Image (tube, rainbow, N blue to C red):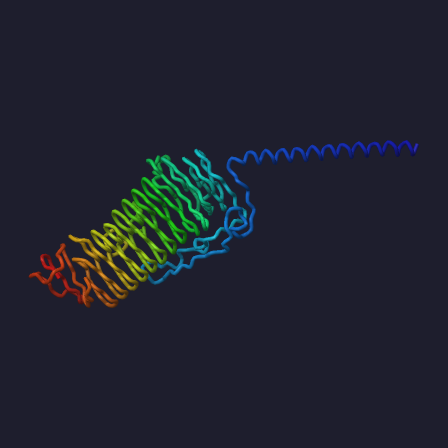
Length: 442
């Protein structure tokens, strides 16, 4: 009897084990099939789901540059307190690829990014857009790994929603984004730029970004920062525009625009719209203004070369450092009534400033308020070097006008020309300035 029970028990164990083995084989086969299906479904968009460490070199195709961080030479005692403008991540030019996801572009196919993270974009495509539609607290980094996008009616990069989006170029690569036709509206949104962002935008990296546009080059409806890379823009409207601010720390920036080079303006609020520059190398050719800010245009550093109708315009223009070279056919540097939050002012405290003016009714330094020169080296070639409606003070610095150093400011009003005291009603005005009245020249 015991032997019989043992045989029955042994048979039951063998049946159970066989069933378990068959179940495990079925599960293994199902899992493998599911994985293969998932891989197939992702092939259209994903090159590879990347799990990397903290260096560019861990992602295939990206060179290992190590960590590269730009240094922000900001000031805190200017018209703008710039000490908190740039974050550590804004200044980081290398790419942290840990957990990054890679995409390859394809014709007539958009890539949509819905969540925070790092996204590596490669390849070439026509009529394709990179669309960011993430959460309000999400930070998204788009890494351009030598891409080419040619669109006719839509932005190449379109940020609909996010907290902040970084567009980063990779060392040793060149990316080109083109728009060749008329932009189509997205509902009530007039998407009129090759890179169009409704939220904060940062352009950085170690590579080259080329933008060619039949409208604006880059348009940001919030705060825009540039901290690195080489950026070449050719646009029939503004090369770079933002609603609230443009802040530039570093980079090589070449702009060719049929309107303004850098333009900061909020149509609904004239108390915002500043431009801050503390570094970088600029070549700006613009049909209208090289740099135009609604409130403050502040330059603390950098090498800036401008050829434009007006070189620099803002309600408060302050130059504290750097090298600024302006060739203009209207006003060289203009402090105008654009913002109710500031008194029109031009203030030069340092740096090397050169202004070369064209012939005619042109002013080198023209302000609808006050002109202060406290330091720096200012070299002006113009028929009318100074035109101010308020007070003018030369408190320091070296000022040269048409090859001769001057020790006081002359005030050229209503377009009088250089050429001597031709019977003008010249007289010394307030604060040591010399008021040159209509009809006279100096």
